[in-house]
Length: 115
Image: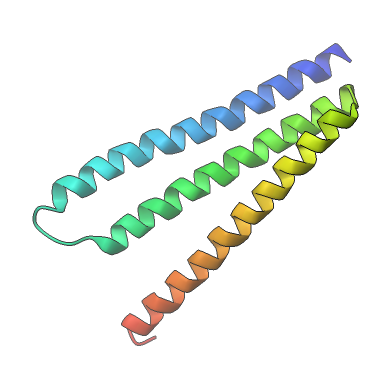
């Protein structure tokens, strides 16, 4: 069972790394957008940046949920199940809202471009 703990830890570290990687990329894109803002308004590109960050956040959360599932299997405690349920609930709400926002952005884009 000790190996399952290590596997859960590795999955959790991957989740954190994905989130940090997305934030680092997002910071670079934000700096580039702000430099270009001097010459033009780039509202669409800022929206793209928000979606980029949301994608990495959701992906990282998926890994963290997987790590929590492995840990809960190893050491099933009622408190751990509550935490896992809360994380899954939060992730579901975030995913739903981001997907809704993406759909709204796609509608606006298609209306703006006559598609």
